[in-house]
Amino acid sequence: MSVARTTADRPAPLRRRRAGRRQELFWGAVFLAPVLVSLVVLRIVPAVGAITSSLYKAFPGGIIPATYAGLANYRSLFADPGFNATIVRTIVFNLIINPAQILVALLVAVLLVQRIPLVGLWRTLMFVPVTIPIVGSCIAWGAALNPEGPVNAIISALGGDPQPFFTSPGQALASIMVIASWIGIGYWMLFLVSGLQAIPEELYDAAKIDRAGPVRTFLSITIPMLRRPLLFVLVADTVANFVLFVPVQLLTGGGPQSSTTLLMFEAYRTSFAYGSRNLGAAQVVLLTAIMLFFVLLQFRLLREEGESS
Image (cartoon, rainbow, N blue to C red; front, side):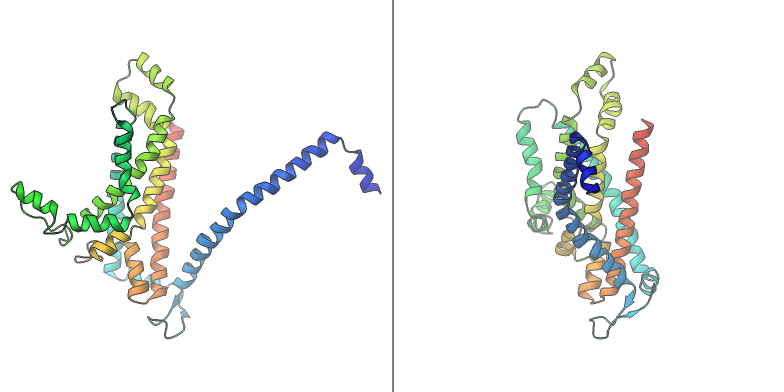
């Protein structure tokens, strides 16, 4: 009785606000539930599974049940000079390809927001490689860069020597970078074009009144206003290139002389070709840790840059 009386004594607007808040919370939970469930099932559970598996050791092929081995898999990996070289190669690969892709994508995006004829056609052409399945792109590039392929035919016609793109330890990784960039640049360009178009024109008009040149305008207005799209593109590009797998698997198989063996490919080969699932899980954990380090570093650098500006 007393509870019913207390509720009835509350003002009507207050009851309506509380009821509305409960409804908002309910519908918010309903809409967020699929995302949270997907996050747990597709990300957190596999990550916990990989960490747990990396702490066990088993005979390759799973004939003998795995036994707890602590950090033995990690000690074994770091004692292997070949695996250490793979880590270094993966980091160098990302230190080169990520800035290169972002820089080219930014330059193309800046060009394609100018008032040039057929700008929609040029944007579409830049985006076409993204629409082609990566397996198809690898097959096409494999044929183009074949020793007897059209690229070497053009080089020979111009008086040069045919190049061993995928069969030379000095050129194979660079060729993989070209293929990954051919696919990635058009994709990242799209986000940067969107970010550039969102910058208010009034800022550029003010820069003209102040007689700021193109370089000063680009550094003082375009880059700071593009900070959020740039951060997204940089982080997403870093993640995509750290887990790059298909071109290596299809075109070089990690060779020649392990020159294109990256961490993602090495983890796959250890797990499924050599049958050492626990050792492969340890490699995946290390790959994730290195990738997270670079992603957090990018967040920190761009945040400090934004605060200082």
